[in-house]
Image (cartoon, rainbow, N blue to C red; front, top):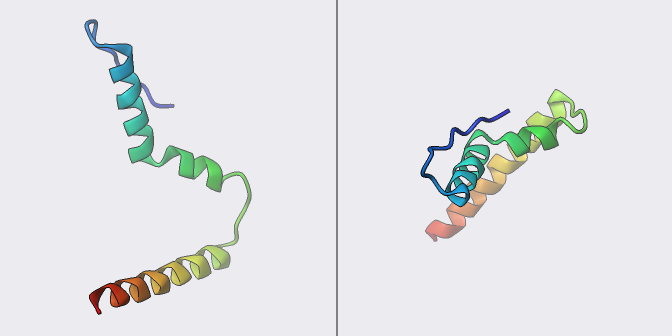
Length: 64
């Protein structure tokens, strides 16, 4: 659980914005979604490899 300490004169909107940024930076939602169902190591490895191949092809096309 993330804890954000609010300064006495700080606006609640600003505190919520800091909370959202902290959630985004720690990738907390990604971990929650990943834990909803089990994925085998081989599937994660295959997906990561496919993502790397796609990224390389994308960057190669951007250079041309």
